[in-house]
View 1 (cartoon, rainbow, N blue to C red):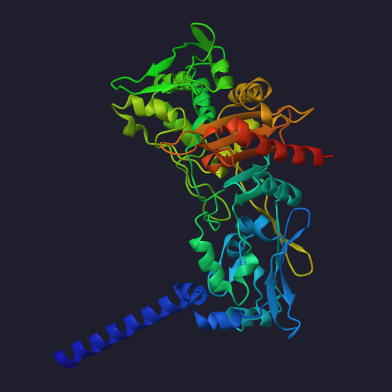
View 2: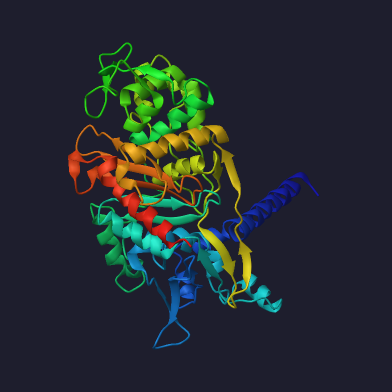
Length: 486
């Protein structure tokens, strides 16, 4: 073979090799992405009328189901009986817009395998069950409804967790939307209407939106102080009328513009109970950026929290960003400045304190079952990280209990039950503050941890505080859960 012919043969072989690699990539690697793209009309045609498995709550309430069409029993329509109450947790499946939340995360289990794909044909030949599977959530239906009703139309979120297992007991975002609107012939119009709504009903405020945590972040600061032996509950601090920030004309004041205590000094316990900004601004500077940043990370800030989908990562600035910036560190110590947290994150903070310092891996799906109800997979409780030592958690729990019994969180109290909590009022440069409450109960044997955030002061507006607006919402959630337990 002469040189030119050999080079031509090599070029042709290389071309065929590239074509083979491209076909392999498109079919084997990128194929599922192209197949599942909502714009793929072939996929849409195969999905029309297909049955999907049920999604049910922990107590068996049907949250999503496929109902046979009255015109054609072989065609099915997706229905969401609980509508907007569970919308952000359950999600939706739409031919035009794809899947969301649990409907997305467990699509492979929920879908029927009677689609004539190669994998489904092989499964049929092997005698495998092609019927859709069902998914059971950890959410308590009554608790979810109570949380939704307690928000009473105010923009915000409620997240409730089981501290010792990580089970999500409630996951509510408001305002919400009716996922049934994404199923019918008016789906496009409905989605456009929701996208144009200034209240952003499609936004998952529980896991997909972050806020300044305000004074709820003082739990993290107090934890760092106790863990590092910088201060304890009975440590005393000077009690100025305002905290002058070094190298700056800025000051930090308490909410009522007065001193924290009634004397020259005040204990950390008292400052925590009254949520005194002056003391915690000073404490943040005493701790230093490295210790405070490390503790925030241990609680889950700046981490990708493992979950059924990817919650927005909560943020605390890296230690290096506070170099020569003690004012910024002090302001961050009271949950302001650049600190950002999701309600999901702050529920994890509360649950870690409740669970002797251990943060459990959160999960929303308890089990997957086949069409006959046989359990195929079940989620087990799993430790995610240790945020603080048990002794530190015990001290924090005691301080948080006093917030409810004799502090800013009194409106979260549940009769006959020891409740621990922390309020937060994240002051805004303009407009009303976002208000918070995080907590858990019973203190002696916690079975629920909760985080509540309400945007822009809710119905109260600029005069709102975490204690006046968010704590009552948490109280209804805690009371519902505790009163329903045997």
